[in-house]
Amino acid sequence: MLTSDFDFDFPEPQIALRPLPRGEARLMVVSASGSLPADFPLPVEPEGWAFGQAKDLVRILRPGDMLALNDTKVLRARLHGKLDTGGSVEVLLLKPRGNGGDTWECMAKPGKKLQPRRGVFFGGDASSGSNAKLSAEVLEILPEGERVLRFSIGGADFYEALEGIGQIPLPPYIRREADAADAETYQTVFAAHPGSVAAPTASLHLSESMLAELAARNIGSAKLTLHVGAGTFRPVQTERAEDHPMHSETYVLPEASAAALNAARKAGGRLIAVGTTASRVVETRADANGLLSPGAGDTDIFIHPGYEWKAVDALLTNFHWPKSTLFMLVASKLGTERAKAAYAEAIRRGFRLFSYGDGMLIL
Image (cartoon, rainbow, N blue to C red; front, side, top):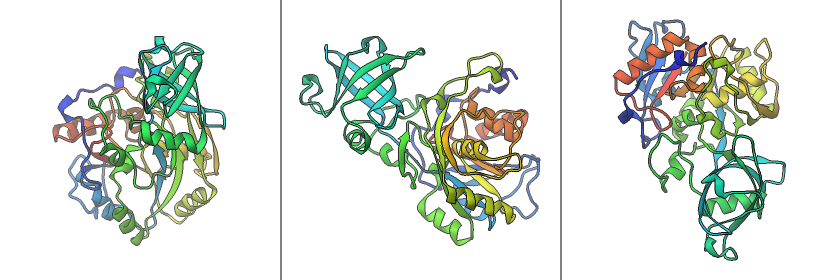
């Protein structure tokens, strides 16, 4: 596969800079087979797709279906600091090292200022060091330029400090600074476990009232965790898509969630992965027969055309950047040409794109 096969054009003004209220975004429903059921609750077009809103999921999904939800929580991972030698620096937390929670791999700007053994101070009167709310020391520089920083505190105290001094790390294509509203809108209503530098954006469409309505129709949900890393935005730069070095992300699939998802499928329900992140966990833990086993670890699974899906029956997702691993995952479910045709139709209709944009349900 050539990476260029996954390229497409889009108008930059259609990049969503702010979200609509949960449930109000537009939704495109696409059948992988080319046809939707005769009793589908939305008008079906000859191409085998339909259009509604995210809140229509309540009547689109069937009793017995089960949602797989990623309950990761986005960190206030963007930090502005002062060096012990003077000068300003911006740090983006990527992922922790070890179990103490005080040592992190980070991106830094400008990186050349962050050399080993250099100190950095964040929050409060960071310029004086002694009055800073958080400090760190540069331990090493990684081969691709990331820095390893050891902070002055770890664990719950570290996460509490981030709440006071960090910023929500919006994706680079949202060309504005994060503000107070993003602390709520760039977080799912069921976020529980801190660790992501990007939201599982398909889940941003779900409100508490929608989840309650789904549950009332016997459409359940099971939680899993995948901490989304900055690698999710890393462009595929290899000529052949399959040569791309896939990033690794930490996940947990609890025993109760695996059991609930297995039971739903055994009873004839569909496993609806809410987002590419939930898909990656489910497919990592599925055997050849689609049976899920609980577990935790790191996954670098790369789902692209040619991949044989084992357990995910349907996928709720957003519209993704061209030539990204996320669009390749969508193309593996729909086929590359059908995925590109669906995107072209959504763009023609003015759909809002990317993290804060509209959604697609693939059946």
